Length: 124
Image 1 (tube, one colour):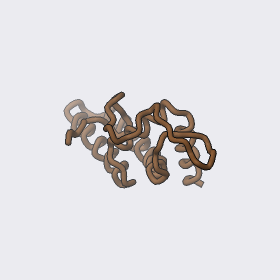
Image 2: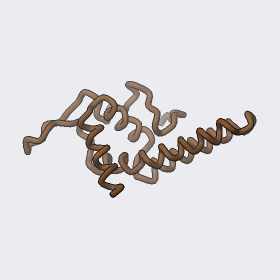
Image 3: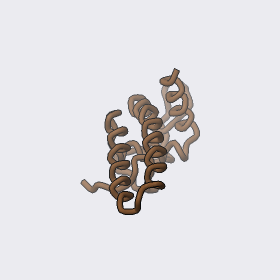
Image 4: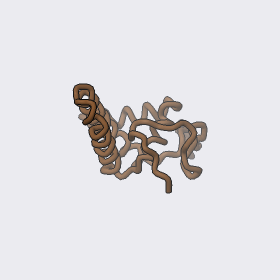
């Protein structure tokens, strides 16, 4: 299995695994609800839970890296990547799953809205 050196909130277009839903694929719901890519609810919940943690870590480290001596910046980038990876995996997702779902959300407003609603629901 290849490991990509990307941050959990960054994706590489068209590098999803064959078993994952591609951005254009949707599933019809037998209950007549709107169609959306076939992403299980538990995965959407995990992404919604991870996003604020990843964003906070990214923001914190960006500020620290900008003011750090150049010889410490690479080490801090590694720390940031590890912390963001942990935030994602602590929610039960792989970085690849997280990235793939974010890519789908970027291209599908219904998925983006679903994740946003779940983020707001968990924050109340």
